[in-house]
Length: 96
Image (cartoon, rainbow, N blue to C red; front, side, top):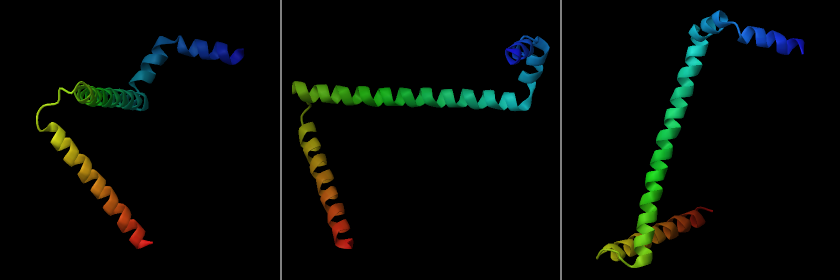
């Protein structure tokens, strides 16, 4: 109870709050907070863009409205990834 009243009186002191806000640790904490929030917003936008691109491609594949040559390229990409995966697994088995 006493601590609450003491804290309340300190927080209601405008001059003290102004001095604290001008102190270097508080300013640095504010800068770091703004930096983190900005970075998270950028990451969120990037993820949203990638997700929308993925969803658009998936919808094209489901509808069958895939441009000519894209099916072939996707199949080649799938085969290349599978081959790389098999090669890397084979190398790991050979190392053991």
